[in-house]
Length: 343
Image (tube, rainbow, N blue to C red):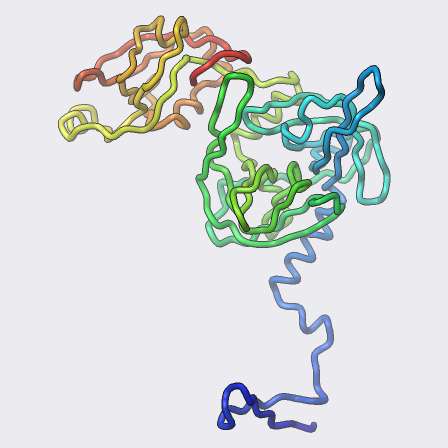
């Protein structure tokens, strides 16, 4: 075997590198573990990630509204995507990796979680396997699949750069925080929305939804909460939520109150919707909600998690702190409808 002593002129004459001239690894040997994982996940999951073209019909004909990506949920055509990709579109074309184009209809969309379900024609489609975002760790490898800039079947890879982020969504006059959003540095571009964020085993752990800044993307996690939302969309076409009619932010409590009630903070009420359930129950601006039905409330997100369909029209015991003293009020949440304000 011939060897060559090579001098790097930029580093000085006393720095040398030894290398093989005739012996070079082939392409298979050159692939590192990282590349092999990304290639395997891409090959497994690409058939389950589709492109979406969204249209709106009018008296002047059909007009294209936009495009995005989706993930096949079931062999009989249910597809999960982002609600903002669907918008108020009426006609959707699903593009499969094998070149087929299938027409689809909207089953349900939920702007407050930025999730939507559509159903395409066809059967025996390649469904993806859903994972659990709750098992993710910062620094873990993730792979994003979608159709950025209209380029079908694109794959990017990176790591989970942060967990527990929040994403603000809007539906009419009502805003909501989507909790536990995944932040990743896997490159995301327009058209990636609705596509898959997968772990190294090829399980979909998130639905790509937004850009958080240069080099950062956000994905709605696949977890117990999002699975309930998807189930509601599939079966009912909508998601029912309870509504109290307050807005607020986290606030720490004084040491004396902390010692008395055993919690160090709660949701400070800085706005109460007139005529809403909270106002009817006697909740006032300046109150700090620390528990609901015995469950601790530390911020808007933890209160939102309790505003489920089962809470609608049922008594809810709110533990609050007012003027430095704990007290209890009873509220009856209503069903959230577009146009309601507050939380």
